[in-house]
Image (tube, rainbow, N blue to C red; front, top):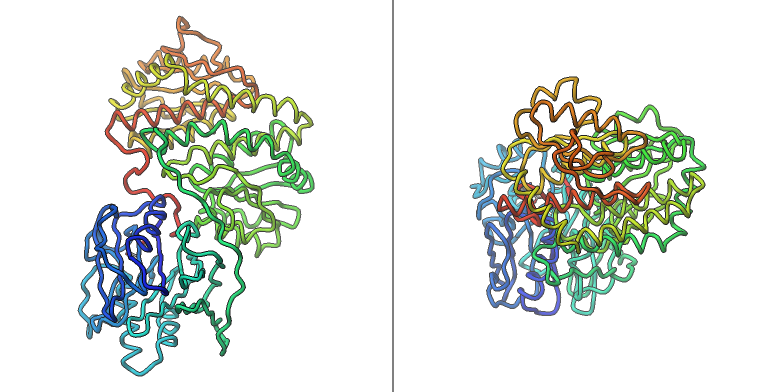
Amino acid sequence: MCGVFGFTGVERDIETTVGTALRALEYRGYDSWGVSWVEDGRLTTRKRTGRLAVGALPAAKAEAAIGHTRWATHGGVTDENAHPHCASSGRFSVVHNGIIENADALRGELSRTHRFLSETDSEVVPFLLEDAARAGVPVEDAVVQTFMRLDGHNAIVVLDTGTNRIYAMSSGSPLLVAESDLGAFIASDAIAFHRQATAMTPLPERTLARLAPDGVALKADDAVEWVRPAMIPVVHRELEDLAGFAHHTLREIAQQPGVISLLLEDGAETAALASAIRDAQQVVFTGCGSAFFAARFGVSWLSAMAGKAAFAIPSSEFAECMPMLGPETLVIALTQSGETADVIDAVALTQASGAQVHAIVNVPYSTVARTVERTYPLHAGVEQSVLATKSFVAKLARLLLVAGDLAGRRERVEDDVRKAASAISHLLDDPGMQERIEGLAARLAAREHVFLIGRGVGYAVAQEAALKLKEGSYVHAEALAAGELKHGTIALIEDGTPCLIFGSGTGSAAQLASTAQELRARGGYTIGIGDMQCNSDSPSCRETLDVSGCGDAEPLVQIALAQLIAYRTALARGVNPDRPRNLAKSVTVR
Ligand code: GLU
C-alpha cells in the first residue's frame, strides 16, 4: 500500500535518493506520487498521478526530502490529493499513511481558518501542526499533539523546512528508521533503504522520531530525554528485473520450482513447525486473500493427512474465533508481506487471548515477523507482481511438507513435492501445453462469468484459481464446493459457461465426473484439470488438462496451471497482470 520515504543529511540528488527509494516501494501498488525537498532553505514540492518514471523528478539536490506513493482512500486520484501536503506558511510538509477516522470533524473545525486544497483526510495534519506552531508550541510537541488528535491507524512523517529535520510518529501503520554515514532515513518498508542506509530499527508505536543529519533520536510517550535507538544491519532485499520475461508475474511463476527446492532443503524449519503443531491441541490458520486460501489447504492437509483439528479464519473475521482460543491453541498467521493490517490485528488478538502465535512469512523483519513467537520462512524472495504466485505456492509446499511429517510419511510427501516442482517446470517448457493454455484463456477472456469447482483440497484450489482470474483479468470467477452446485448456482449455467473442475482430493474423481456431467448437460463448457478419470472422449469434460502424477502435491501443479491460465486471460483482456486496477501488494489499511 502507500509508501513513505524520507532522508536528511549530506546533500544529494533527489532522483537517486528519493526517486530510487519510491520506485523500490512501487511493487506495493500506488496511484500517485509526490516529493518535497529543501534546497537552499526553500521547500519545493512536486506531485503527480500515475507512475514515477525515471526523470520525472527535476535534477535538484537536497539536504532533506520526503516522498510518498499514495493509494487513495479519501479523495480521488488527482495531483492535488497526492502527498505531500503542505501548510500555507511553507514550513511543514507532510506525508501520511493510513486513514484518519475523525477527518470529517477535523476538517470541519479547521476549514474555519484554513483553505483545504485537497479532499484527503491527510491534509488536516499540516494545518494542525501550523496552528500549534503559531501558538508557540515547539515543533516536536506540535507533532505529538497533532498525532494524538488523529483517530485510527496512521503514520505521519513531517519535514520541518526551517531545520531540515524530519519528525515521525505512527500507530498500527509501520515505519522504520535508519542511518548511514550519509545521514538519517525513514521508510514504511526496509526495501527503500537499499544501498542508502546501513542500520535500521522499527519505530515503536506512538514514539516520536527525530531525524537529523547526525542520526535518529526517539522519544517515547512519557519520556523527557531523547534516546539513540539500537539498530540492526539493514536486511537488503534486491528487486529483480524482468530477466527476459514479459511480466514479473510470469517470471515469478517460473521461479516456483526453485522456491520449492529451497523449502525441500529447509527440513529443520519443517520439523520445527510440525513439532509445534504436534504439541498443540488445535491449530487455527489465519490470513487474507490468497494467504487465507493457503490456510484452507493447511486445514485440508492437517485434518485429512494427519488427523489434526485445524481451522482457517480470514484475518478480518478473526475476532469471531476468539472464544475458541486457549493456551492449547496454536495460531499460525500466513502472510507474504508481514505487514497486512488485518493479520497484524489477528496476531494482537491472539496474543491478548494467551494462545500461542507463529507465522509463515516471506518478508523477514516485517511487523508480523517481529511480533510473533516463531516464524518460518518461505524463501520466495521479493515478490513484485501484485498477484501472489511464488509466495502462495511456497506456503502450500511448506504446509504440505509439515503435514507429511505429522502424518509419518515425510519422505513420500517430499518425493511428491519434488515431482511437483519438475511438473511445474514442464508446464512452462511444453509448447503444446502453452498453446492449450492460450486457447483456454481466449475462451475465458470472452466470457463474463466462469465457475471453478472442486472437492476437499480441490475446492481450495478452485478458490485460489478464482481469485487469480478475478484480480488478474477482471473476469467474474466463482469457486464452489462441487456438492453445493445443485443447491442454487447451477441455475447460472448456460450454453458455453466455462466450468473448470479441479480433480484433486481423495476419492473425489468419480463424484467430480458426475458433477461435470451435470454441468455439461446444462450447456456448461467443462474443463477438467488434474485427475478427472476422464479423457477428451469422456462425456463429462469437453477438455482435460492432465497434470496428475504428483500424489499429494498435485494441487501445487494445478495452482501453477491456474496461475498461467489467469496470466494469459489477463493478457487476452489487455490487463497488466503485474499491476491490476484498485489493488495494492500489501494491504496496510483496515
Ligand atoms: N488516507 C490518505 C489518502 O487518501 C492516505 C492513503 C495512503 O495510505 O496512501 O490520501
